[in-house]
Image (tube, rainbow, N blue to C red; front, side, top):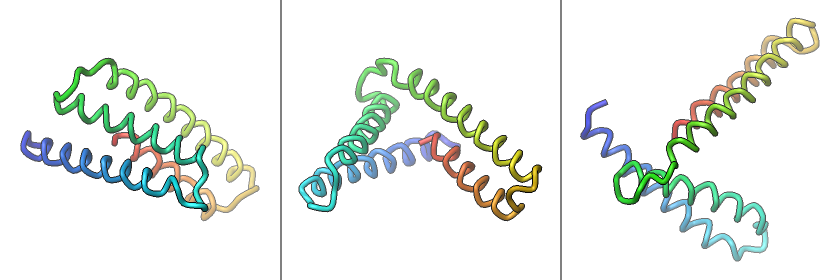
Length: 116
């Protein structure tokens, strides 16, 4: 990816993350939202926001990339364990290929989102 496209993508991710935080704040007073869920999501997006700021050079990195890399590794290990368990079920005849592929697709999507 070119430097211009990298900056453009970083900006888009930063603006989208800010929009998520703003919307979470707006939704926090709705009756149908749960405080613990809002808090968890806001924490995740706040961390992502700080990490993107660090990438853009707007704040000191302060270890955001290292922590993010360690988190991604941990999640990938857990996703792989889930894949192996689903394969065992399929190989044992307990689930169909279709079910296995649906679950694999969900795991793959979760893996792809780690890069954000």
